[in-house]
Image 1 (spheres, each protein chain N blue to C red):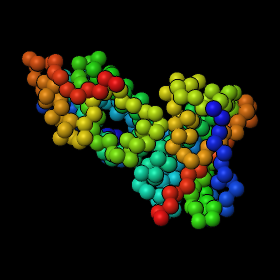
Image 2 (image 1 turned 45 degrees about the vertical axis):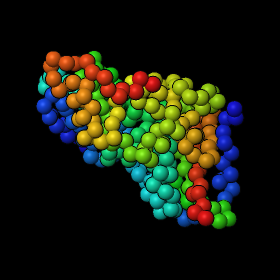
Image 3 (image 1 turned 120 degrees about the vertical axis):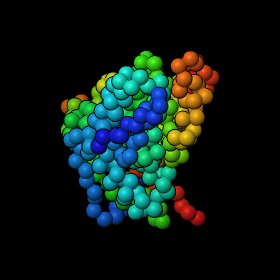
Image 4 (image 1 turned 180 degrees about the vertical axis):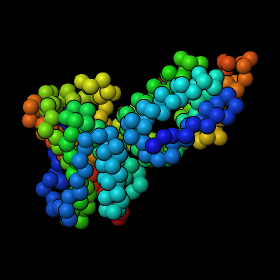
Amino acid sequence: MEVPILKQGHYLIASIQSALSDADLSQLREALIARVGKFRARGVIVDVTALDVMDSFAVRTLRDIAHMARLRGAETVIVGIQPEVAFAMVQLGLTLKGIATALDLEEGLAFLDRQGHGRLENRQGHGRIDRG
Amino acid sequence: MGVSKTVRGMGASTVGDDLRCLIAADVDIVQARQTGRELAAEIGFSAGDQTVIAAAISEIARNILMYAKRGEVRFTKIIDGTRQGLIVVAQDDGPGIRDVSRAMQDGYSTSGGLGLGLPGARRLMDEFEVASSPGHGTRITMSKWKRSSA
């Protein structure tokens, strides 16, 4: 199941629609990293609201996306982690240290805007990145 | 630290037939956790517990795929007195685990993974047991009891 990736201004928004297999997650990583270059994106939002579970593979892939996107000059925000999913992640010992998270898409966009990723002249901002 | 939590659920009565999921590809992991979640919902586990159970299933099913390439996950409803719960058994004929107590430590992995699968699944479930020896496959038995609504 391919995850649709929308381009909005300088941001890419990947909206996960259903449970994903490991191969689907890896495909999402490749597609996002390629598109950061193609569209000269400065921000990436991954909306995981529809994910039924975040297990170790999903978390590792999201971390890889965020770190790879940062190496390509784009900041990533993970949005929409559901409360029960957050609970299970903590029990599993899974963290998203160093990666920005936000409650939902709206908050994610606001975070990137505050960081100044939508503008060329100001690439450095102060946001709520959890440095762990 | 002991290697396993004792699965007392093994002594409890099982209810109905086993549900079985063959694990041979990554999509089977998704199928297994959805099957487990549906059974957990049928038993009456909360949405939070359903997610916890699904996450634990995801980890042990992935372990089968990573280390043994194929195996199966079985799900059974259990009853012990007034308590209801769910037993999940993951079994494969793979290479087995050389050092079970190390495999249960956070961050230990021989596959390049995060090394949180088994210890993480153990934290998510009430009872957790690993039976494995090199060359003889691995059987993981884990169970969770529904918290009484009283």
